[in-house]
Amino acid sequence: MAADWLGSLVSINCGPTLGVYQGEVSAVDQGSQTISLRHPFHNGIKCLVPEVTFSAIDIKDLKILEIRNGSQGGRLSQVSVVDSGPLSAGSQEQGGDGCSGAPASSAPVAVPRKTELTLLEERSSLPQPQCSKSYGERRSEAAGQAKGPQQRRNSWSSSCRGPSQATPKKNGMKSGGGPAKNKDSECFGDGVDEGLGTDFDFEGNLALFDKAAVFSQIDTSERRAGGPRSRGGPGERTPSRYRHDENILEGKPVIYRQITVPQPGGVEYCTDSGLVVPSVTYDLHKRLLSMAERSGLTLERRLEMTGVCASQMALTLLGGPNRLTPKNVHQRPTVALLCGPHVQGAQGVSCGRHLANHEVEVILFLPNFVKMIEAITNELTLFNKTGGKQVSSIKDLPESPVDLVINCLDCHENAFLRDQPWYRAAADWANQNRAPVLSIDPPVSGQDQAVEAKWSLCLGLPLSLAEGAGRVYLCDIGLPQQIFQEVGISYHSPFGCKFVIPLHSS
Image 1: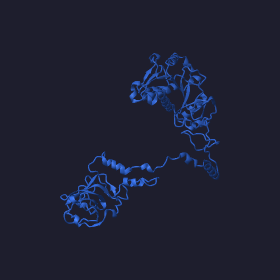
Image 2: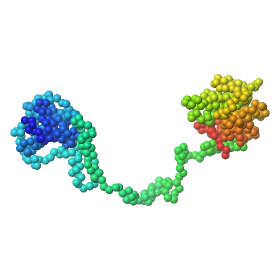
Image 3: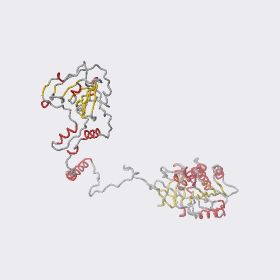
Image 4: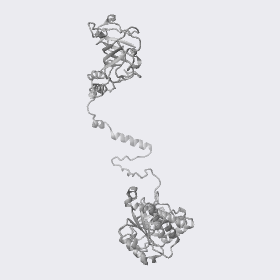
């Protein structure tokens, strides 16, 4: 009995959740109450699997569209499933979702026999189901129409699929087989690009743009707004280009001479940003430091600030982060520090202490004196706690070139130290070592430079230095603006975000 329905076209309604399936009956199992359809369509969309199996528990309605077995070759009327008697159709899709694996536990449902079917009309007289065509078939029919821009639609259209319907899965087949090709064909279709016309004519489209008319409208709107704005067109001057660090907003004009002194030193410098920094005489510089001393900025505080700034500059000259890293401990830089028995020497000892704290090998040269100033004694006590090396003879200095020589031999007030044997020996060693020299707080240009320096670091405001001082740098030692005003200096800080800045001769 069940074999009589093989090859017939049926439509199975599984309710609003699973939807409607159509296809050719390929198998009917009365024992398990299942029915299988080959080449199935789900809601009018061709399924990706070649066969779908249904269980009787999920079938809500069954319609026989066409009987292809035996002499009964016409299209038949709608036949509904009843709730009694044995059944030959069910709802289990092999490998599918929704009704997959549903047990046939419900009461058997009777399927009408061929003798109970009523022939209504021939096959040609019945209309075809609206959703029985696949996407590829619809595209083939549309390809014969007039060419033009066509809207591309997905095969899983919402017009044929309910909002809560499940998608049948593949019946145990890999994606590399036939279903994958069918999937691509249904999703993208054949002849997708058939509706595209010729290449876009960019030149013709550009010719439709009237540039002169557009600029004329812009000029008219700008005149009404109250002023023209340069666009860089033909015959117009374009505005200057701005760097990434320049402010494009117009503001007050920059005043580059923000520091004025009552007693100029004779040389003017300028910073990288163009601010003018005039040099001062030694007398004015001495008055400035005396005023700072009376205001509470003692010598010890100035020594500490000078040591920090000088060591920071020295660390940069030694290579900075490229040289001083934990992975480069076998190439620690060596610095030779030459100091005298004065304030400048104490500044050098303070710089050496900070360098030693940053894993720099510091060799401090300071000759033995019967009496030294208190500032040097205090700085030496701190320096000896860092592990740095202190020598009192030139013979104990390294014969090979060091990485940097810091010169603090000179004094502003006592020029007779240059006649001392230790001074001449230390200056000769520095000139013959072939290492670059950094001078801290060198004397004014009236005194010759015994040691040729590559860099010179001035404190607060620069002095007028000699040509042998090299490139001049200025460090901030923490003098408040009011202290400058008390000695007659109109002062605005030129340092910006830094504590050490380079100066250029104007």
